[in-house]
Amino acid sequence: MTQTQDLEMAARQGNGAAGGAYYPPPRAGAGGEDLDDDGRKKRTGTVWTASAHIITAVIGSGVLSLAWSTAQLGWVVGPVTLMIFAFITYYTSSLLADCYRSGDQATGKRNYTYMDAVAAYLGRWQVWSCGIFQYVNLVGTAVGYTITASISAAAVHKANCFHKKGHAADCSQYDTMYMIVFGIVQIFFSQLPNFSDLSWLSILAAIMSFSYSSIAVGLSLARTISGRTGKTTLTGTEVGVDVDSAQKIWMALQALGNIAFAYSYSMILIEIQDTVKSPPAENKTMKKATLLGVSTTTAFYMLAGCLGYAAFGNAAPGNILTGFGFYEPYWLIDFANVCIVVHLVGAYQVFSQPIFAAVETAAAAHWPNSKFVTREHPLVAGRFNINMLRVTWRTVFVVVSTVLAIVMPFFNDILGFLGAIGFWPLTVYYPVEMYIRQRRIQKYTTRWLALQTLSFLCFLVSLASAVASIEGVTESLKHYVPFKTKS
Image 1 (tube, rainbow, N blue to C red):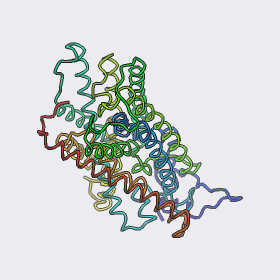
Image 2 (spheres, rainbow, N blue to C red; image 1 turned 30 degrees about the vertical axis):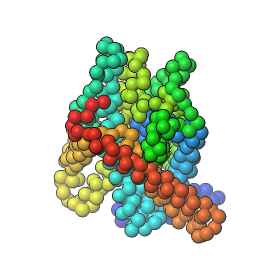
Image 3 (tube, rainbow, N blue to C red; image 1 turned 90 degrees about the horizontal axis):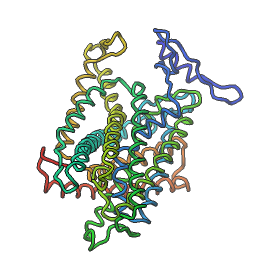
């Protein structure tokens, strides 16, 4: 029996005195390091590191579009929609956190990825559909973050240009070079082996997200107080004044997709939870981290959306910090956009690591004796290792995502589409179905009907938002010349 099998058996056979949970004692690995109950390196994550991962993942490019989204929906529907999405995200994430272990929450078999949890509770045939939704969304998020980071990087140059030459000057910039530079940076960071090695980057990125969100909120508040505000209404943009009737419907639905994208992180929740130490049981820690992360981001979202709408009215820009509703103080605009770029460097990695892990795990299983796949080459006096598969595959991934960003640089449309295709299946459907299976909830009972109704309503919202975003991309492509986009 291998050491890993021995540890797994200990976990299965553990029982606690007086009904308490039994935690297998840590074991020493070959190098003298402590191991967890599954034979892997002992996890060290806490509520704070998990919250940092969540905030890094959630407060991304989504927050920048909330003023625009609120403008499409108005004073009533906009804030209410934000609160509804926050509640749904927190509730379903709590259900998902209980699925990290199969069986006992303290000693059951660990599910290392979202797809592992789906396979354990719903069966292998659902893994394929889950994989399509999850990895398309993760790849799309990488593309979306590349677009957003490049726009913010270009905005730094534009802010300086407007300050020197005046607000009427032509300060537009080609985005392609900024996307390429962002991709090169990601190639280097992608060589970090896993989530645990990214804790410092996530904490730094979380600080950056607080910084630029606070600046956006502060500038919106200052503009509102100064009285230089746009026209606002209870229902948002007005038909016949701001938009026609068809545009009103499409943009309102697209706004729902943007808000859904702003809360998207469920597809990496299991991976984040796999960094958390125990005891206490990982699901307890993750639920606290989820509450802290979602409540913190919702507070920012309400401020960013409502104050941004109050400041700009129905003419709110699609990206509040790069649409140049703000020109001064230019140095503060510069700092905010630099914070966005630094944050998205970290967020890109948080969302890409599950894709990296899936491909590399599958390759190791298929070619266990291949040195190209499994051999680690020590660098920097043994403090850092490189692997040829990791170098090759991760570089290809970054290059492809960068090229896709260059080909389709449509900020609001892409965000709306990603939010739509990821929200219902990954945030709602699979967590609900796994919870029903885990708790053995009988069909047609009150709880079963309530959960299925929630899932169906979210499906309708996702479907409508996806259609609206596709329509937006189609319209944008009519006026788009590849590789010559300026922002």
